[in-house]
Structure formats: structure tokens, C-alpha cells
Length: 596
Ligand SMILES: Nc1ncnc2c1ncn2[C@@H]1O[C@H](COP(=O)(O)OP(=O)(O)OP(=O)(O)O)[C@@H](O)[C@H]1O
Ligand SMILES: [Mg+2]
Image (cartoon, rainbow, N blue to C red; front, side):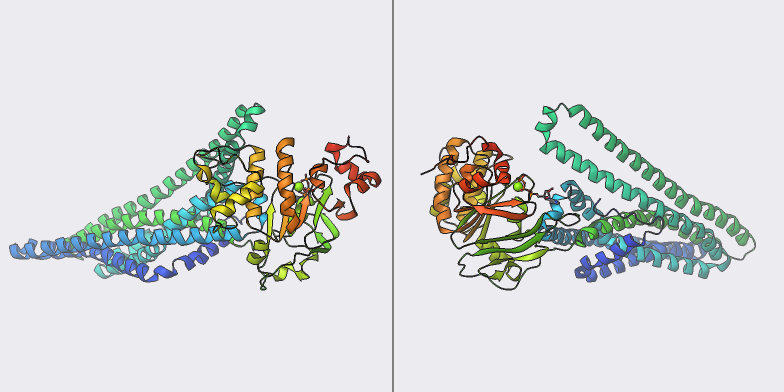
């Protein structure tokens, strides 16, 4: 769950407030919704008019044997029915239109919001949760928003009109109907609170299910390798089983309410018939009035059934609204600055930088001081988990420092617009992420306007040589429906992507980790020429990577404890020797892998 606070049982006012807030998505359609309401109301009034015509027919032309009167009244009834049909068709058509519009706007907003959220938000959550919100929840809001609310109002208005008509026809019977239907309100209230709880559980389980499927698909190799397919299947069966139980409970509840909703009016109808017959026998009303009364009471049944259905829609939409609002309520923690970063010299400075992850008790960085001169390359070394990746993520502002500051050419990066900052700072990540798209699209992510020559240059720099041998070259798709790449190939593509952006500042999180010795040497050579012109912070875990840098900074327990060359640090610093574990066999006086 994104928000773990338990909802209060019963009234669940938060859900309804959230649903009310969703009216911002119907604002555009108020005109259409109003028209729909009027048409629907007109339709219902016409339906109610038919019993009144029947009353006239029975008490007038039928009794008097007036044939032309019968024809006229019948034609009028036909006209009523036809107009009602047209009105209903119009309402359904508009319903589709409005629904599609609401769904579109809500999706757009939600997606935009997801993209604006801090990087940490997504790393802490299963994407399954968000997928369910994106699909199921938006749909249920659409179902209610496109007409449910209007229908509810129209429906309620129709009751009042109907009761009014009944009271007008013969008030004692009208009163009987009005009082007889009162228990239904209580049923509806009970239904609302119970169904709400079940709906919450239902959505939660659906989220879990989506997450499980997603994890199993992405981690299928792992599951097989550890022989966990059986266990996974059992877990899945438990979740689907739970979902089934909830669905059955919901169906039972709806069944019960529908039964009450149809039983009560039928009992009322029975009372109307008995009391009505008595009234006719004593000449208090005509037979026509009794028939009209009966027909009207019968059409109540239909209206009430619709009410049950609307209540269910409303309840689902309220739960879904609350779930979407929880995500909407998460603010982008990184605020856009106002100054454009132009003409960068490239001095990158960390001044007493502190950082703690949101919700974490301990700080990862506790006062990092580091100055990287324009054009200089600094290798950042530290034990696993010491905060190297964290420090690199602060430069493009995936997170903001919680203390101290980071400056580029003396300007605090929080004052800069994110777009200009990220144009001048390019990154690669520990796990190179590639989209299911063509190689071209993947490489030009930061610069969609790059020419083929520029792309070729970047690919050559990153030693992405395998593209030439592919049948479709740059247009070959990667990932789903495309070719699979090895770890090293992915890393080189990610490097080409960063290089293509021609940044002044490069932040590379261990760019050579997945390369074999042979390719590593080749990429290093290329990197060396790239690094020559830019300011670079390079997370390094191997001496060969360190060799690319002008200077090494050692991160330990949240601070930079030492600077120097690889050789100096190896000779003087035990923490450094530890961090360079993979090459611990290198003696202090031995040079790291030399690349010329
Ligand atoms: N999104 C996150 N939320 C909370 N804590 C995090 C998050 N990412 C990392 N951490 C914590 O911050 C600390 C530093 O992690 P970081 O990934 O920066 O280390 P690292 O030096 O890059 O390690 P490695 O060499 O293994 O890549 C770790 O203790 C980790 O548990
Ligand atoms: Mg890391």
C-alpha cells in the first residue's frame, strides 16, 4: 500500500472527499452532463406519463366506448415511448464521449505526475501498485464520472417527482408507498460501508497480484535457477484465492442488497393493491387511478435497481479516487530552479554535502567536500554501500542534498532549471537501462536531434561495434521483440548515450564494470579521449578504471577521507586497499592496468 494509514470503518469520509475532488476532471463536460441529465429526466418523466395516460384511457374512452379517443391516447403513448428512446440513445452516446474524455485527462495527469515524482518514490514501490492504479482505478472513476453522479441526482429527483405524483393521485396510498420504501435507505447505508471495506481489500489484492506477476516475469530466470517455481505458484494461488473470496463476498453483498431492493417495493406493491382495491370498492378512487398507481409503483422497482447499481459504482469510484489521490499527494521533492545554466566552464564542487534518504534514520553522506576543476577527472572510490551511487545521483538532482551544497561554476545547482542542468550533466548508471526501442532511439535519448554522423561518432567512442553487423543497423530493436544484448553491450550503449549528449560534466557510475578485459581496454581508450575535454566524476571499483582519472577521492563513512593517486593511496591507506578488493593482489608498487 502506498499509504498504510487504516481507513476508518463505516463512513470512510476520506474516500468521498477524494471522489468529490475528482470533479475537476468533469469540469470540461459540465454542459454535456447537464444536457444528459435533462434528457434522462425527460425520459423518466415520459415513462411516468404513460401510466397517467393509461388512467385517462381506462376512466374515459374505454369506459365510454369512444374509439377515436382510444386511438389518440394510444398514439400519444407511442410518441412518449419514441421520444424516451431517442433521449436514452442520446444519453448513452454522450456517456461514452464524456467517459473517454475523463479517462484520457486522468491518465495524462497521472502519468505526468509519475514522471515528476522523485526517483526514490519508484525505487521504494512495486510498479504493480501503480499499474493497477493506472488501469483499474482510472476505469472505475470513469464509470462513475461519465454519468453515475448525474444519474444519481436525476434518479433522486425522479423519486421525489414520483412520490409527488402518487400523493397527488390519492394521498393515502402515496403516503403508504413513501413510508414503505424508507427501510431501503437503511439497507443502502449498510451496503455502502461494508462494500467499501471489501472494495479496498479487493484493490489491495489486485495490486499484489499485479506485482507478483510482474516480478515473476522479470525474475523468471532467478525463480527457475533457485527451483522456486512451485513456491511462487503456491503464493500466486493464495493471492488469487483471496481475491476470489473477496469477489464472492462482494457478489453476496450485492445480491443481498438487490434482493432487498426488489423485495421491499414488491411488498409495497402488494399493500398498494390491497388498500387500492379497498379504496376502489368504496369509490374513493377509480379503477384507472389504481392501474396508474400500480404501474408507477412497478417502475419504482426499476429505478431502485438502478440506484443499487449506482451505489456500487460510486463506492468503487470513491475507493479508487482515494488511491489515486494518495499518489497525487506525493510532491515532487525536487523543485525546478529559475536560472538557465549556460556557458559552463565545468567546475564541480561539493561543499559539506550531507544526504539522508527520505524515511531513513541514518545519513549516507555526512559532509562531503570535493572540488573537481574544469576538465579534471576524479575517481570516486569506496567500499560497497559507502554512498558512491548516492553522491553521483545528487549531481543531476535526482535527489536534493539535505545539507551543504553542490555548485557548478560557483552556482548552487538548486537555483538552476532542471532541463539546463541535465543538458550539461550526463550520467550513466550502474545498471544501464535500455528501453524496448531501436538502438537509435536509445542512444539519442538525451539528444533526439543528433545527426547520423554524431551518432556514429558516439558509438565509435563507446566502442559499440556490434551495430554494424546487425541487419537493420541503428534501427534494430532492443529488448522485447528485439535482440538481446549482453551486459557489456548494454553498458557500452549507455555510455554512447551519455557521450552523445556532449555534456560539460560527466557522471559515470562504474562504466566499465560489465566489460571483459579485452573490450574494457578498448572502451578505456575511448573514454580517455572523452574525459580529456570534460569534468568527470567517475565511480571506480577497479584499478583499471582508476587509471582513467587524474586523482582519486576515497569515500568512507560518509566523508571523503583521502585524496591522491592510486599508488599513493594504495601505499598509505588501508580503507583504500579494502575498497579495491577485486585487485587486492596488486602490490602497492604495482601500476594499475596501463592503457596507452
Ligand atoms: N533508494 C534508497 N532508499 C534508501 N536507502 C538507500 C537507497 N539507495 C541506497 N540506499 C542506502 O544508501 C547507502 C549507500 O548506497 P549506495 O548505492 O550509494 O552505495 P554504493 O557506494 O554505490 O555501493 P556499491 O559499491 O555497491 O554500488 C546504502 O546503505 C543503501 O542501503
Ligand atoms: Mg553503487
